[in-house]
Amino acid sequence: MNSNDKSPHTWPLVDDLNVFLTVARKQSFAAAAVELGFSPAYVSKRINLLEKGLGVRLFFRTTRNISLTTDGEKARDGAMGVLDTMSEFISGLSDSREHVQGHLNISCSFGFGEQHMAMALAEFSRRFPQITCKLTLSDRVMDLIEEGIDIEIRIGNDIKEFYIAKKLADNARILCASPAYLAEYGMPENIEDLARHQCLVIQERNSPFGVWRLTKAEETSQVRVKGPLSSNSGVAVLNWALAGHGIICRSRWDVQKHIDQGQLIHLLPEYAQSANIWAVYTIKPSTSTRLKLCVDFLVDHFHLNPPVPYS
Image (cartoon, rainbow, N blue to C red; front, side, top):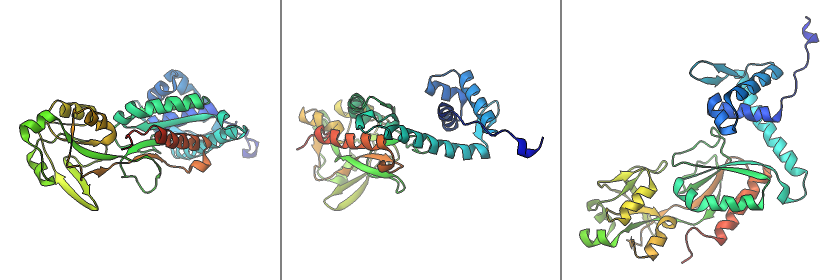
């Protein structure tokens, strides 16, 4: 057959591009099937049809794993652009913000996600029912591009320079302990006293383990602390503090209610650790209507419903 007689490649279905991107991100047909709500056999079939239509091999397949071919990497970049363009095309057909369509993947830490983001997104979904949202809770550092995250809600100011961020609320981490602990071990009079106290250490995202950076006015001090208990769970550490096992350095949004109820005492109030609440993303909101709507909504929501009560 003459090369000029080849039939043109068929246009891929948008749904198949979404399946392809999910498989590429999860690096597993089975994991992609679980996320999409399909059977692994159906996912495999859609990928086979997509490869046939495009006339290229998208994945190297072995019994243990899969990986993108060179053509697959090119297809991934192109598919991401097609889906973004298609979503904005559909959204742009409507003159009303309420008819914007699309999907948002949002990540957040467990504590803030359960206590504040879940209800905020429920309200966002009620207001914009055509935008579907998936909230992923994790306390590990996430690569927004690799893991397909549209918006990450991040506690703390350590934001990579190539990300874009919008502050949602002011917040700080503060030192606290229960009245029972202080009755037994005494009140720390200065920051150096922390070294002799039982401190409840948490490994949260990429914060250094066992090191508390605390600022007084414009001066920042770094204190190495230790204690008999540590965890990667903020809930566990807070419960230990409430039970009188030591001093914690936790976000004000997490402990303020316990301070108000007398269950915890705010220690060394002149010291704090800045930990503002941010929406972090990889593309400019002006290029994505649904992303802009969500970020603007969260700014307004946390202004009206601050996670940290106004003093």
